[in-house]
Image (cartoon, rainbow, N blue to C red):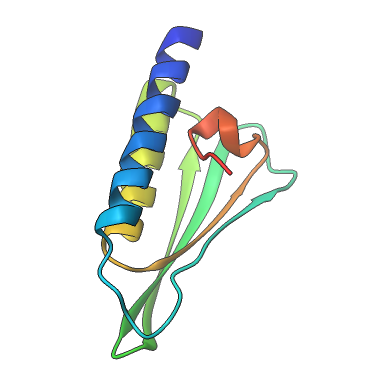
Length: 105
């Protein structure tokens, strides 16, 4: 399990770096914030994605990811990656350290 987590963290870090390099310039600064907070044991993370249209907030999605082994980590990666690639602001709350979920400072 630790090997899979390490591999997932490396893959996510590489993906986020590639996406940051490829990101198209826009008028606002894209933000990804991460807060370590107490959550129920069965919750992996709460992810809020704010989508923009013409530099104005247009829609906010919130997902509560449950602890579900590798499927939970895969879903976390997919949701965060989609937000970053799409130019959204992504806000993450989890009881885990960001490095444990593949988010590098």
